[in-house]
Image (cartoon, rainbow, N blue to C red; front, side):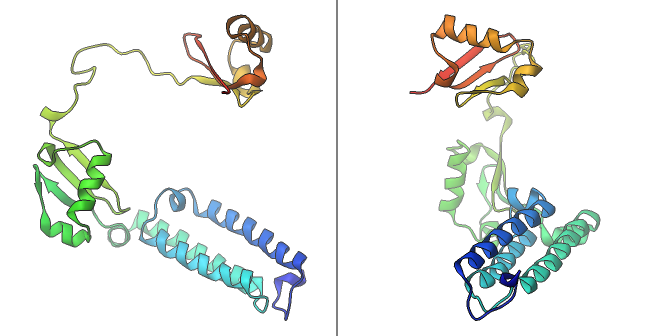
Length: 234
């Protein structure tokens, strides 16, 4: 365990051990912090990401620094992070400080220029984000908000929205997600066992219908109507 402590020099094996220990420690730390720290970077998440990266980078590049101190520091910061997340869930004032309310950028088809300056974004950036949402005309927008995570959510006036099945009084079929039976040339036995089909049925169907073997299939799915869809390697 000498690689944990600061030394005048480290062997190649000790550098490798430091990297391995740090890698799994960071995986464990991220797992504890939860999916929120990966899915979106709020103020608290951003501060944690920069701080943890800076702390752990030094002992990975400087043999004179030990891992023990960095890991203790990171553990304390993770505890503080979890406390911060808990406080933001329980204390509304703290939550608004960490994740402020969204800023209206467009109201009833008009750009709120004062809020653009408040959000520190340009009109070009606003238009770019709207194009990603397939919105070409600002006047169609009833409300566009600058979210705390740095994204823009937009809501179209009802008269410009695409009619839904409910609007047209069409009774839709219930949604069902197809099951993956084969993936990258291998049978997913977990999904296959949940279905009413057998491995022999699957192989025979591939041979008789598609004239292919399992290893030739990159993806095969089956829906609730027992329709088998097969995609082959090209």
